[in-house]
Length: 141
Image (tube, one colour):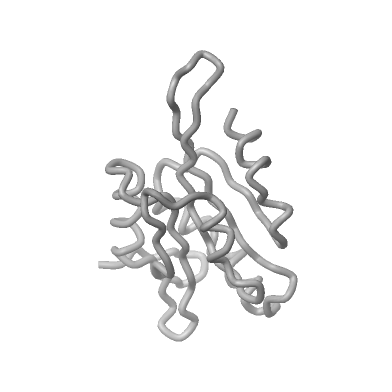
């Protein structure tokens, strides 16, 4: 079963929702990268990062010349010594990507976010400096 995003006619596959729930509840994944298949009009899982992988693995998995969506589960300890977790949604749209891809990803973003329930923060990045680890850390606290 797929979930339809009404505004763009795109569909989010069941695998996207299932992988996100495994990340959110079971902590099986550290991050998930999603891509849009323009031919089939489906949002699919492109890459899944294991629980032992980190933020730098996510950043390295994003292509330099194509758009992607990603979710990252950031674990941290507060000043009160409490363990917390925040889920970040990243809209990756590098300057080297095609205009058509940028527009498609921009118009489909809200539909995917509605399907992925439980996202705390959103980042939009066109180059790695706009989504650095320090930005994630500062936003979460």
